[in-house]
Length: 170
Image (cartoon, rainbow, N blue to C red):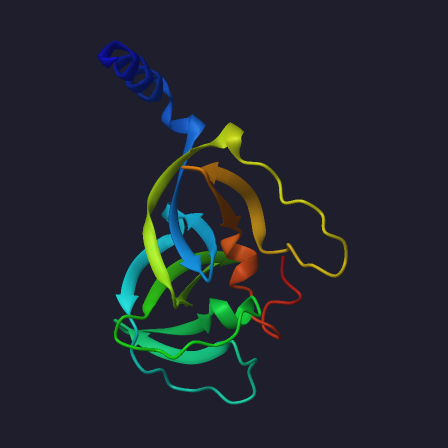
């Protein structure tokens, strides 16, 4: 039995780093999502935001992050999953996106929980299925099965594009 375990460990060790991708996984409701770990700047606890008028409801406001003004969005509301009350246990994942060729740092409120960092073979990532016009998969970069559960891998650039600010940029 130990020989089989050694063989599977050797197979994992023989994977080239370029064949693997790392994602920070988190849950919203019953679903698990992942973002490229290289886009994660930090994970913070919730702090009150300065509200900005005339923005979509999912754009909660801004915080000062070591001198940088960082917009905070609520992913539950962005995905139309409803609203949750923020507590000291609410997690904000600070991500970096490249929108219009420029880096932008934004916070994403992940209300339910941050799970862990997962390694996924790039060849095991499948494209998002086409559900037609009624279901938007624009934020999903791909799907991967990890430990017998499906993880939706998010496109950080599309996810963090703000309405009315980035619409004319690609």
